[in-house]
Image (cartoon, rainbow, N blue to C red):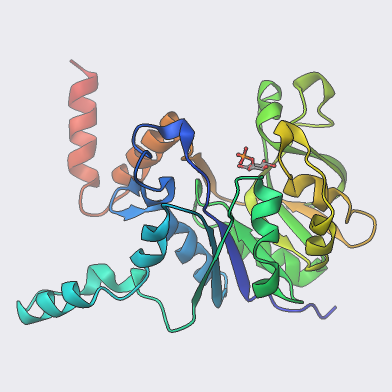
Length: 288
Ligand code: G1P
């Protein structure tokens, strides 16, 4: 089966980050740092690792620093070079000409609306969506692209969640299972535990066909009064192949205080430079 390659990725980054106030009062939540780099850097690295060539940021007012971050910092680089300092730490934050395109989501109408704002840049090809506050270690998109190359259509990343948490996620009605792939028979956004069709939840990584944009053109508000990506995706089921893929990655929900601090601890402990010292500190403070 020949499938069109996934070359573009949409990063919905216009959200207000209210769950992490006051930290996010003047700083985008995607600029919050896990060990030594902002969340957005992890998502961009994951996309590049999966073969993505164009990064489409859906931003909003007050979020300009996200685009600036990936620009060349001329003064900084010139000053460092003059002082004989290495520019290695800046390497992954550099982008090629035209690698990033930013569009604006002028009103916070929901994830489906954010993705729809990228429709003209996405055009007529499949695309990925990455929600940077879902930090996946190691990156999940590469594994999803591998599944996509086998079955085509639409793919969501999925993981089992406790039943009392279904109201925080898009939930899958599962069909036949084949290895790490489950056929998606239905999708519902944030169902109450007693109404959830399963406990298989959508995690913030998607590979979608461009037809979802046409569905989003007319999508009415759903859960929480927002235009939901889940509702638009649900309409593609039966018309196009649709699978959920479970990946070999740990997910940190960095949109919550606990997830954010846990990610810093886990990645800090695994860090070549600071891991050993951090482990010593953690074990000595726990024995006090
Ligand atoms: C969004 C999606 C939801 C998905 C979740 C994953 O919800 O709407 O379907 O399960 O991301 O993190 P949000 O967390 O933005 O409320």
